[in-house]
Image (tube, rainbow, N blue to C red; front, top):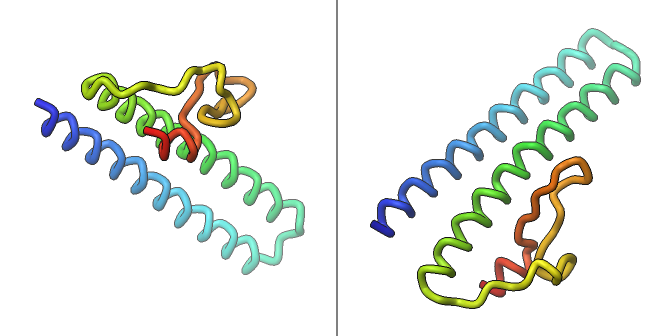
Length: 111
């Protein structure tokens, strides 16, 4: 069963990375079209801000998926998981408006 969970995780992770790639290509085209039409800097900055927001949302999904997968594996293998009180060292809050936490890079290394 763990092998199947790993396959599902890899599939979902690949799907999120493809979504991120598709989003980046879309916004690259939007920036190129904006430059071609010689729209003002405000339009260009709006596209860049929208792209950054979209990338952040997808990256949050990637981080949450990775965190869930690593926590499942750690529990199955009876490996200690860092306490949530270690926020900043092992955990990071995804956004102020989200009440979710994911493992930081140090948290991933810890596991």
